[in-house]
Length: 272
Image 1: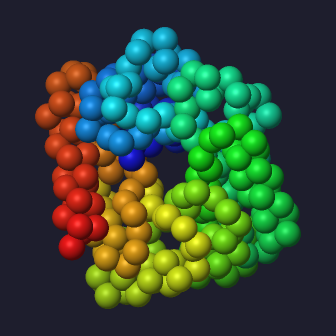
Image 2 (image 1 turned 60 degrees about the horizontal axis):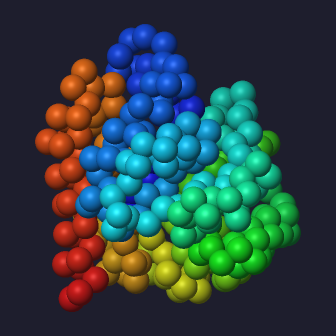
């Protein structure tokens, strides 16, 4: 599954690559082009309302065989973080996006060691209930982040703790960060992924943020060996072409093969 729901982080990536300001229209154009090039090779596409959803629908940019996932999260920025907090976006009407073709909704959840676990559980449960009420699958994406008080932080411990806290609340798919973000040994990543598999009650997939693109296929294989169902990723697929002067060509020659490699990795690993 392919993620194209990045927002201000994508703007920064594009600005760093091109050296000039990036408009909302630039973000939208990238998302439409990427959707058109990549969805023939993806089982599902995740996109957000702010810059991508409407244009992708209007441009008919999604391949008929690719399901649609609508991001249902509103990101609250911090002084040094693109996303300091994430809440359910009340502007997203589940019935409307369902009628537009959505099969699922996704909610990102910020997990901090000094955060309120009851509030996080309530947020996820509310989201899952809303999805069920509208006949939509639910995807939750907890991400491990530093404590608000600036104290010591173990990102890997947070990844597993988030799964233990939120992985049994009824979401149809749990989207997890890769343990060690790919920096650990294969054995370390596999062991952590087994912990995730034991903690999560249902299907789970991995995201690619923070993992070097060349390492991500290997981490996907390790996660699938441990029990994951696949990936829901963006940067590992298309980050290399952000800011390209010939986007369509680079999507075809770089991003499509990257996505195809990931799909083969899942097929070969899960079918063993």
